[in-house]
Amino acid sequence: MNRRARILLALIPAALGLAQTMSRNVYLPMRYEREDSQVVHLQLHGVTRPVQVKHPCYVGMTNDLVMPTGNQLDLCFYVDLRQAKENFVIQLRPPDTEKVETELLLHLSLVPFRFQTTISGDQFSVTNLSSTPMKVESSQNVRILEADDNLIRGTFVSPGALRLAGQEQILLKHQNKSQ
Image (cartoon, rainbow, N blue to C red; front, top):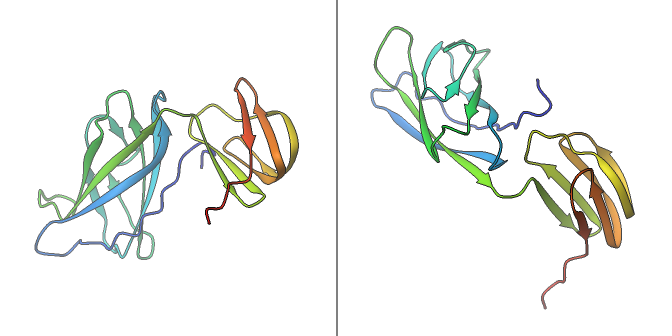
């Protein structure tokens, strides 16, 4: 799997076999608003039959007929963010029929920043929300435990700082606890 792909694991009870259409909201992971595309991986549990997937033209899939493995259906698709609307629908139906049994309303989460920084105590993580790989250029009072193109995780002594290649410095400070 492409390491740059954003992954979403959605536990969605399968409606295949029900008499009426079941609708579910699915919120996609955050993505930098100036990106061209987003790769999404959904896992639907409880699906035992093949599924035909109907999607808008700005969503691409290798195969629109998807076979489950065990009781799980893995959907992997590409969203062209230049054409996609804020929300869009993907329909699941049995092969060779027009009867929609499950409708997924997908919500995009486009944000104006490339990275998301999370601090808990003396631990931090920086998550990449773009397709450009992250590289640490310099650090100050920081111990990096894990670093790849999409995630940097470690500990710091306040105040700490990271500078990513081509980016402004990220300041790491302990959060004040309200009393």
